Length: 447
Ligand SMILES: Cc1ncc(COP(=O)(O)O)c(C=O)c1O
Image 1 (cartoon, protein in one colour):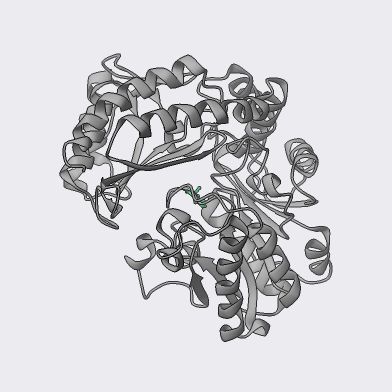
Image 2 (cartoon, helix red, strand yellow):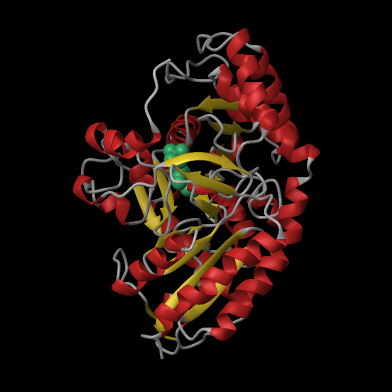
């Protein structure tokens, strides 16, 4: 068997690898060896508590034998079939998804989140005969050219202008740093939602409603700040879509599959999108897979028209088998319910932390989807690192956590708390004990 000693993993990977989202000379990867539950281990047997579900995706936790066995069985029976063929996992997964998604009947399987969003955009453009797509500035929708264009954050700006045309961005209902409400921070939630809905409607009118195919939103914003829509907001976006004949695409790539304490984040507000994109928690990353769920009438539109799209690995049987087993694990172990129950526990821990540390500006969470905003000054809300930047304090904070066996994701001035959904209260507390110490670093520059 082709094998190498553990000690060769890092040097060989560095010699021949090319790393994404990185300057090649600056990468410092963890040479990871194995993973189980909420932990993973590097080649030196150092154990990390995984507070980011790797890439916000291992929702059921690591090393679940039920999913591993399903993958192995599928690999033995039929590891691959042409995208135009019907397979058992394809039949079963479509049915399963129609039972757990909000009113969606038909499913197009993709390789991940970015191409799920690209396909959703294609479907919406073809179905409506319109071309514009509205998305928010604080959004991430993927790294392929179309998904990158849809992305609002600086990851898009890095590749402009060579991206898909036709995307217009609007502002997020981000209460902590709301542009419209600096003089009126105590505005009611209903009025706050209304202001942002009016802002969106104004943009729709300026752009010309007849040219807008879809509004694409992360139901709860992920890396750009765990921005939880205020009451009435998502319902209001749905109503605007209905008023102007625009399709609503919910990007549930990060927020889906139990992350917010419901199967999908839209379920928190009983909003039914026309199209919904999924990936990450769909297989808990045991195999790569994305999906676009759509209402029956959108699928019917293509009854006599060709849907001009597809990839060699569309509906890959191994990934579909992983998804089926993953969803069954979530159902058997009542993982969505567990995430919902742990939401208030995480909230209490976040709030306690905020009360003890002057560098904590705000904490937010819904289910096991949480964030800490670090600031230099609670009054001015000056962030601990600038927009799209880093700071020595944030770097030292992250290093402290990693040195003390806590793996997490920091994004500019924020700290994301996105653990596997099977995490226990004790394990959460274990991570928070490290955070508590790490915050002493950022507290030193906070007033
Ligand atoms: C909300 C959201 N949409 C889309 C994507 C892109 O998914 P992928 O990396 O699988 O292409 C991501 C990835 O982080 C995401 O968080």
